Amino acid sequence: MIKSITDAVTLANGVEMPRLGFGLADVPDGDPVIRAVGWALEAGYRLIDTAAAYGNERGVGWAIRRSGLRREEVFLTTKRSNADQRAGRVVEGFETSLARLGVEYVDLYLIHWPVPGKYVETWKTLKQIYHSGRARAIGVSNYLVHHLQDLAQRAEIVPMVNQVEFHPRLQNPPLQHYCRERHIQLEAYSPLMRGGVVEVPELAEVGRKYGKTPAQVTLRWILQKGVVTIPKSVHRERILENANIFDFELAEEDMATIDRLDQDLRTGAHPDTFDL
Ligand SMILES: NC(=O)c1ccc[n+]([C@@H]2O[C@H](COP(=O)([O-])OP(=O)(O)OC[C@H]3O[C@@H](n4cnc5c(N)ncnc54)[C@H](OP(=O)(O)O)[C@@H]3O)[C@@H](O)[C@H]2O)c1
Image (tube, rainbow, N blue to C red; front, side, top):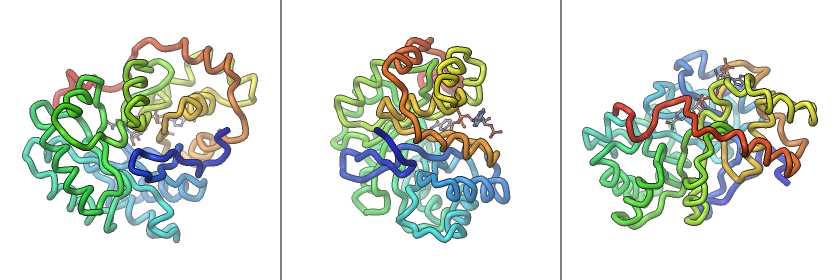
């Protein structure tokens, strides 16, 4: 049973990654991000997910330093932007991220999107960054099975993590299967369907059985599927609500009810058609 906010998965290279993290897309740099990260760390979250493209790496680094936690107590993820990938500036982009965050290493470095014609080359550069010791783990984001198969044929290291949109309405069973077989840790972004889970009656119904909200049962369902997740909120009460999921366990029948909600429905862009 997953009992604590610090419970972790072990990645293929032995690095421990917390199962529940905190996402920061669309949170402006400065006070908003500093406040949100501060509340999340206070609530016990130990995985913080940012990206060069979110423009808030400076505030994230500042909030972590201000928390009084030691650097090694926080699992920090950032991602390479598509612009740097297109321009072949992956190492420079990585160094800019480290400087903005004010850290000497990140725990996980991801390729944000599979830019066509570029992502294999970018992956090889990430491998160099990994071997330099400045990223404890490396991975990809928005990769479908065909992207992973392409990488497998053309590169040596298998990504340790694949961060994708994943929630009750978008479950992509073939991708889940592919990642499980190859020890690629799946990480769910937009786990709350960007707030849309509150409108799904079946989630409210399952929640009533446990005295939990639709957001809480959704996050618990994701964790029980062995997937890491990073809900975002800029409201303290929701940050606490989303972390209050370690005192119950969904029964098999309720897991199955949520499994049946899959409609292959995205709230964000499709990796094959996204305008990169
Ligand atoms: N790799 C990628 O391409 C990619 C793409 C998208 C996202 N991500 C990452 O994944 C993280 C999470 O995804 P997301 O931000 O797209 O969506 P999300 O976490 O599914 O949903 C966030 C939205 O739901 C609301 N919310 C939060 N907690 C709630 C609750 N308990 N009840 C009702 N509504 C709630 C938030 O509002 P308030 O903030 O107003 O509370 C916000 O509008 C991002 O922040 C980012 O770190 C990565």
